Length: 199
Image (cartoon, rainbow, N blue to C red):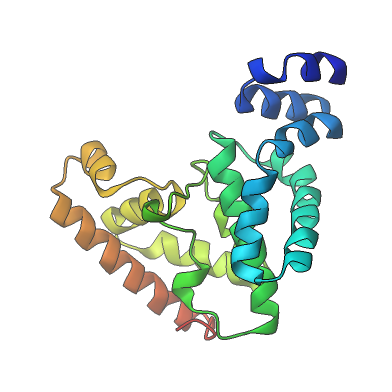
């Protein structure tokens, strides 16, 4: 199987490799997929850690997390999904040393940073520690429907204002307002649920 994939690597899409790994669990197939974006992952890690050695270690650690994550999640676009996974890994490592990381930093990156998720809420993996993942999900659920929809679309699916407006039929100004208000309400709710390290 590996020989087949290596021979046709330029012909195989990310989606095809993802599905092949999810079906087979073949780590070499996952490795072939990861090879395509290892420089991207390294760049993200270097940006956050500022140290080549630590960034290199993180690249290896992230691959190890993919062994389970890729099989667990519905991944629509591997590259942006991997970017989010890499960023969240770095933030979690930094957060262990600095408990004052801001709430805004802990959210998935926005469209302006060319980062997007796979369309499901897996980026909240960044809140796995200390029960914060449950708190985030709970707070998302209590947002007004329009705010919840816009926040999820913008932060967790990396949709632009225009894309959200196109799907909702709302004006850009209303979409922007829903995102800003939803973000503020989410922060307030998280603080009420004991997530006090975010500012």
